[in-house]
Image 1 (cartoon, rainbow, N blue to C red):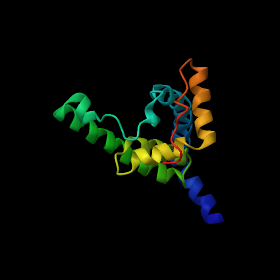
Image 2 (image 1 turned 45 degrees about the vertical axis):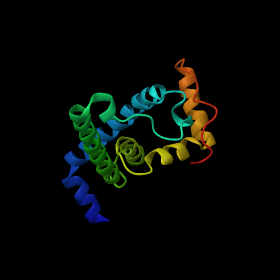
Image 3 (image 1 turned 90 degrees about the horizontal axis):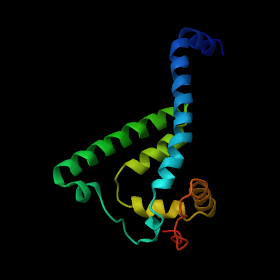
Image 4 (image 1 turned 180 degrees about the vertical axis):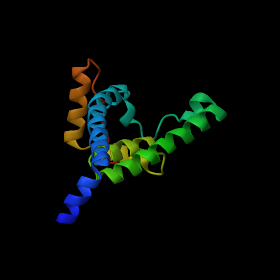
Length: 144
């Protein structure tokens, strides 16, 4: 126990920085989540497959660059989220955001499974309604 107290006293600057990052991350998620939720097209989850990718939308060179940058940011956030599981911060939320940025096989199916949970679906539609956006399509997937 005394070892921990001594370590905290010796590393108080690091702990203040971690606490500050934790507060910024928390406030950032309070701002970012509603923005992301209202940007989802209302029929996004009613399609059997993902609609478009960055490469098709922006062309080969720019789209590939954006795809690489998006995945790099996702990896950094995933590592930060894992670290925040034992350090101060919003670890699970950061990890969830990182997974939305990363491209991996089965991602769209995982997203559809998460959105098919009743509480998640109702919460997202509540946020959309409060912001004046149409709710997600009621023909949501049945679990994947």
